[in-house]
Length: 443
Image (cartoon, rainbow, N blue to C red; front, side):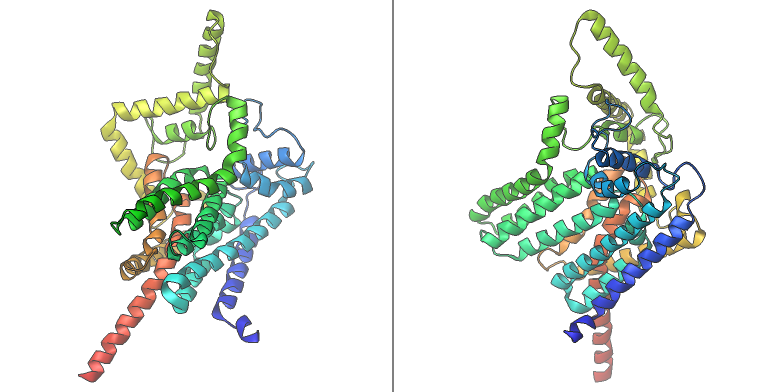
């Protein structure tokens, strides 16, 4: 038992927690004076939802016409803290927010443990320790643990679903163990979608990856297993997201899988004058709301029933406007996609919220190192079952944020997964260097 406590991963987990708590203290102390003790506008909206949950009020944002504004899992996580801080303004809850950041630090430590576990499965103990060390110290991962943003709970759920997928891929197909792990992977994926709706399309990419591995056997049986695997994964997702879908259908009469902010987010990324960043404060929403209200009054005057809710109609209007702009300006859309790709994956972040230059350079250097060793690790593990699974989130988030908006924030979950491959990459290089040294000695 004593030897178990002395394992390197124990110290790495303790280090990760210590670094995150120190980061939380520094970050909270550097919050500028203002109406909110959060540094991100998104945090304010999550907190408003959490306050409504804590007070037993209807789940909505500002008005009854914004009932599907945010997915519910992160506000549910925040609601006990909001209950504790009930009656206080956003500029009066520094202590409660600091406790939230500390809880996020614990979740960040869980992420480090999951990275270690996944790496151990494909690269062994030494690779796992190095991967966990990367995840423990990477500034982007530390930030996602202590910023009061949905990544705080999304990252452990995403990593948990990937771990379950990795275990399932190693299990014997058509066994009870295989389908149980697949079901659990789907359930965690559904929870991750309830934390961050942008993960919603991952299920299709996951099933494509698994199907290609199964169909490569060129047998008739894998075709059946592909269908059953997809069904088990979908059942897991449905168990997690079903109540949210039912609620949304009850409100709108439509199937709304995530939120009714997809149209606004899509228009934020595709419109005349877009820069690739969300730098307009969503001011365009007010213009489209006025247009929608004019159309609604016209329909009322004609006696024509309106479709669904105002929130749904407004979302559909902005979505259609974004798609129309892309159709009319394909070359500009391609150029803007490249701009957003660069904004997401450039080494040095430029967001003013990050504060000091030292933080920016630490983030950029660590990112380049992890990405470089991750590429080597992917090449060295390419023949191991399931290794490519840990490269897929990078592709997913890369394509996704060429469509919506680009920001360094949106690459952080993918970089956390790349730590798995980076640990394998370092061990591969060390083994090759040792081989070269032995060859020279023999000569």
